[in-house]
Amino acid sequence: MDSARSSFVALKILVAGGFGVGKTTLVGAVSEIRPLRTEEAMTTAGVGVDSTEGVEGKSTTTVAMDFGRISLREDLALYLFGTPGQDRFWFLWDELAQGALGAIVLADTRRLADCFPAVDYFERRGVPFLVALNNFDEARRFDPGSVAAALDLDPGTPVISCDARERASVKEVLITLVEHAGRRHATRPAVVTH
Amino acid sequence: MRMNDRPSWYDEQAGPLVRLYALTRGRARPSPVLLDLLSLVTAENDPARDPMLSPEQAAVLTLCRIRPRSVADLAADLDLPLGVTRVILTDLLDYGHIRVTRPVRPVDIPDERLLQEVIDGLRAL
Image 1 (cartoon, each protein chain N blue to C red):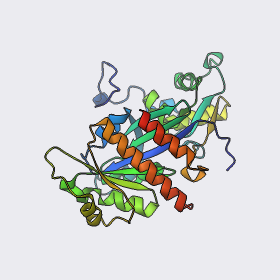
Image 2: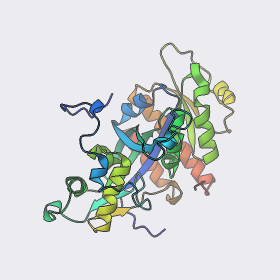
Image 3: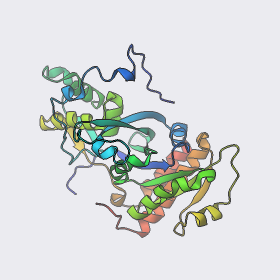
Image 4: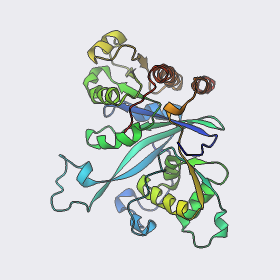
């Protein structure tokens, strides 16, 4: 690689999961959250959703992602990107996943199936991830082992409980992810890229 | 939940007051090469010295004068979509007003020390 690298290191972590599972809450618990807008052509974004016949290439839609930065030091920061919950914005993930240190798949045990697409995506792309079970007050507490079995996770993929509203809890999730990513990157030097 | 609630007399329903293509002089496609979300932008020049700069270009230079800022940060700071931000950055790059460095990818991380520093930093938050 020819790029001159500045001494500043920025690492990207994705936060994925079904719609309404608490991604925005999680990002907001550990960082100052800001919306990051991206414009996408409706002909791509609206496939199967909006009829774009006759207006191809003319219309764009704005997709907002949650975006948070955690400054660890002057020269070291973690960037959190909440991926859009709707499946129709799937294509945005490819850019987000590029070069990501790892991903948090936030899951609600009452709607576990909602996180299947995210699990599948990160497994196929070789992005290290963990599953964090957001403990909604009324949710049944699940045994992480049974969740790992239900999601058919690769051995070694961490499954942990968390409270996305609690800063300390989200910090633990991040630490667990970075530890896991470190192990994964150490044992698998060839990370899948384009 | 949004922190970004600056008071304004119009709402989102009104749509943008300045069409976004006006900010990019009609172009929609930035140079994709260097402008990763986490690429770091550093200003090379003082915006006050070039009266030809657009307000958005000057704003970028002001934002990344002291220390580098990521492309994602700049888009959020400017409250502009990523694509538009990238076009503005591409121009500044062409004019030599900014320097862009690519982000460190996990495969480039030479040892576990950096990740340990991240973990230590998180614990200390």
